[in-house]
Image (cartoon, rainbow, N blue to C red; front, side):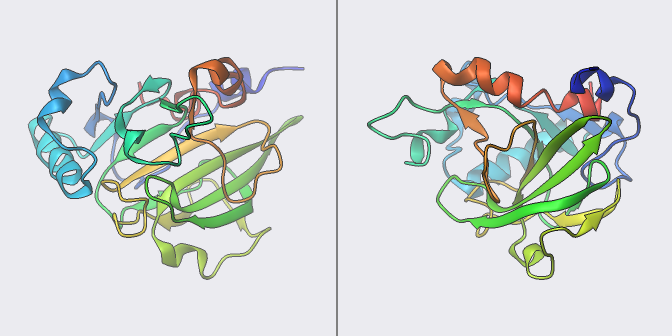
Length: 225
């Protein structure tokens, strides 16, 4: 059977935020622990974080900042969601983040139906989250959209169909998105493992090989770079 990753190679024109923004207006953003420039900012403060993004984009003559797949970050140290004394720290990001202002339209990557949704309202969590289920040849898989506006889940139900490129939601602000600068966390998931409205978007080093296999690089689908 052809792998899901191979099938992604033939897919084109896929966007998950405002389709009017060309990829030429996207700029990479390094939020890894090795980026010492970040030490100048308190990125645990959502207001400072948002100012950092708002200053960066004009400098890069861009509208969207992207990145984060398989990236080791210090962002999560502030939250017990990622730091439990009884388990290894989770600090490796396994989705892609698209940083742009709140209210921006979020689009369904491919034809799919609502698998689940939830308001994950812990500090540093996804906030409002929607998961779509997709079928591509013999593969069933899922796409997760995190950090959405809360009102987006008021009028949807499990099983609702969304076409590729159709508006699914809009981005939330820090009051509802886990207290981050506004952005979309987009992730591909092969085995949802019984989760509902949630799935780990950050993993520990000892589980990295599993999550890289179960959550392929979203750029295979988006083709931003």
